[in-house]
Image 1 (tube, rainbow, N blue to C red):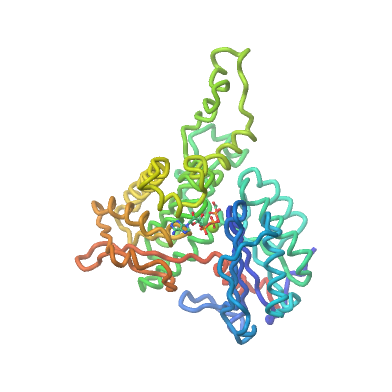
Image 2 (cartoon, protein in one colour; image 1 turned 90 degrees about the vertical axis):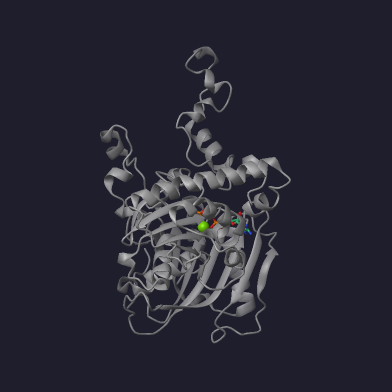
Length: 440
Ligand SMILES: Nc1ncnc2c1ncn2[C@@H]1O[C@H](COP(=O)(O)OP(=O)(O)O)[C@@H](O)[C@H]1O
Ligand SMILES: CC(=O)OP(=O)(O)O
Ligand SMILES: [Mg+2]
């Protein structure tokens, strides 16, 4: 069992285990007073930010000191340096911790809260301090988030071992989507089976959507509870969310993150029976039982989660590469056009579901933040519903440090088009700072 409370002097480490990356940020509380909920104010202040990207292909390490009042300003910033000792998320965490202690001298004992992004929270909707019970519950949900929950648990284990003074607290992607109405979250199957087994739309990227909602509503000078958005979180895993009056109305991922849009290695939504026809032999099941080779659930999930998406279509998991080689490579051109098509499926549907009352169309995630060509291809097709791209603004977004950037034309009452650099680590740290349960 871990200590439930820590003094208000400790540091907060936020760890975001994505499918292709581990993003880590270290914060201190902005004031020693218990902070109050105020969407204009930030209760935490960033000290260090770091990431290990492309963990399963060519791991690259970045590290940057933001607040030099706690850390020497002579610490070298690292930008996408190869990290050959990184093989998975727990070795990525070890790489970070090594660098932190060796180069900055920050004492790990000062970290009293370790906030972890957990993609599938099942029936957990509030942040949970990791105990034997919550650990095993999250572990059982690994089948429903095969690329995420297990890796996040490996980072939690490393934190429990290497940060003995810190509470490990789980924050769930699914929490934000709890508001989705039953008729949208339910599946058209036997409701007894659905209820017994929890078969419904959970939705993911919720920490990101929570952060974006606050950042964008502040930018638009609106109250979050009166803000309506269509947000695209496009990273190694990609999803779209319709936000109505500050709450999730619908999102494209479902029971698991494999549904909805395709991703780096994921198929996205398919005809549910496609997998039975994926191999030649499996397709014969109904005709000739002697030739039948059933595709097991585990194998099917493996194909849809790890052997599909950009990787299967083009040979690279990096959508930046898909984008740049599409003029010379027909496979990449197909993948790019297919992604635009699937995004439009959701943008169009959500525009109607929101009754055309949309304050902004928002791009986010690695592809949404860096992929000017993808943004252009999507927004051009949305001109018919009032979103008009300013090409010059769109092309100058890359490298802009601001959190929310305008890329639409807005002179004649056109609807807003924005890019928002998401920050799931900050979302967790903010929630942690505001929760008196975790502090003395
Ligand atoms: N310039 C770019 N154009 C398009 N996509 C890019 C570009 N730079 C990075 N990306 C994409 O962003 C992805 C990472 O997104 P991110 O949201 O950080 O991932 P994760 O899902 O692991 O959190 C990379 O796999 C890459 O495909
Ligand atoms: C839910 C999900 O796919 O997350 P990520 O994009 O971080 O892998
Ligand atoms: Mg991510």
